[in-house]
Amino acid sequence: MVDLSTHLLSLGPLATPCDPATLFPSPAPVELEVGSGKGLFLSSASATWPDRNLLGIEIAAGYARLCAGRLAAAAATNARIIHGDAQILLRDHLPAACLDAIHVYFPDPWWKARHRKRRVLSEPFLVQAGRVLVPGGRLHVWTDVEEYFRESLDLAAATGLFGPPAEESVLPAAHDLDYRTHFERRTRLAGAPVWRAVLRTLPPRQPTAAS
Ligand SMILES: C[S@@+](CC[C@H](N)C(=O)[O-])C[C@H]1O[C@@H](n2cnc3c(N)ncnc32)[C@H](O)[C@@H]1O
Image (cartoon, rainbow, N blue to C red; front, side, top):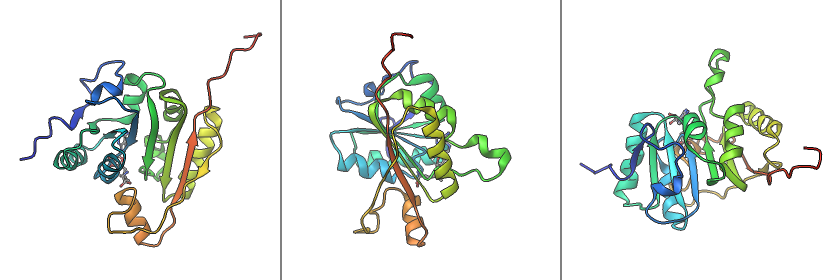
């Protein structure tokens, strides 16, 4: 049995506020992935960027364990996964300006109108994302659902916290796991389009004489 105790964390016991840098043994900028699924991004990003600390949050217990298992097997010192709800992590635990980047890859689209409120990329989430990112911090949004993509960019623009989105491009995959995530792999192998953007947070607004 692989010991998951280092890599698998629970949301409940986290301090309020919790500086995410304290969850890692070495100081480095922290990047958060929301909805890590099977953990391809966390495992490959932590190996590619040893100078960054990679934190994932995954609401499904089985996937969080799977992800932690990958990280433990790789003995990744710069990656951790929290089992819990990203909305709660951002709203209740993370202090302002504590993350260099947030990665949201292939969030569940929740097609039915009555389920839309479950979408991760909602107005409250984007406001919190703008708060917890450092000025100039990155929000990566990739999805195979064009309507969700465009709506998310509109919601982000309406917060006034982000600059204009930039497109992200990718190279052809060099090997079987050369994809950002498992869903990206599945989508590209099926020949379907992927919508990708990165947004940067704006510097905090200076108070004017009138305010
Ligand atoms: C469609 S899957 C994509 C998984 C992975 N990002 C990928 O691209 O392969 C969406 C993931 O987000 C997780 N998720 C949904 N809502 C979440 C929330 N509020 N907090 C954390 N994870 C969430 C789901 O359990 C699922 O694993």
